[in-house]
Length: 249
Image (cartoon, rainbow, N blue to C red; front, side):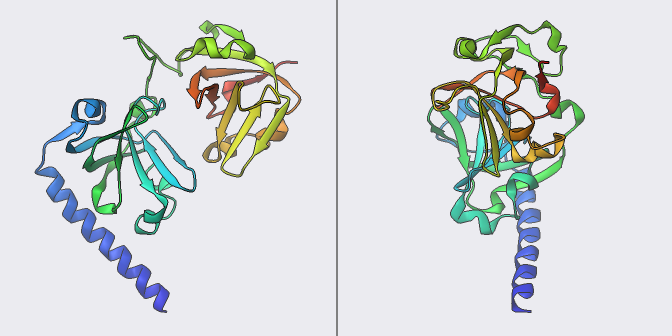
């Protein structure tokens, strides 16, 4: 009974804070998340759609762009998890939000630390157009849409992946090792996975595959379609659906 009463109190408090914050937010100047780099060090209110999330256990990241290494993220640190709705990585995914906080640079990318749910409010669900966010290619004005016909993309071997950072391509090779941590599945093309190309599938997308990815693709030659990005000095592609992976017979 005591636990139920406490949860109810928190729920009522969150509603109160959300409504009150929304009123205050509406009276402040709001900027788009794309403008974050122009306001480093400033306290602002940003607005946009959360198109990707990830919970590492130590922090939850709410991202406004699939290429999160170059664009604004909202960060909730583990000690503050109890203050937010359960599984914030699911609660805020595919939602349009407005958030208040100071924009700081972390490893070259802008972020806002959220230590209270009063700093963020939900506006509405993302539109279909927003869900199909274009992926910017760093250093270029043009944009490549992952929804476009993949038949026009270049095919490369997994050994060449590091030469194609920021480009959308097909990467071909044999999966020689696979590991599922429960939160993320890694498909590796070399035993030394810390140095070489890896395919990454987050737990939120596991249900889209007919079998666990670590079993479906292990010891199979495949080709993978997506944006090659640099993560801690090695190339990887994040896969969100089985349509991005073809098994080569």
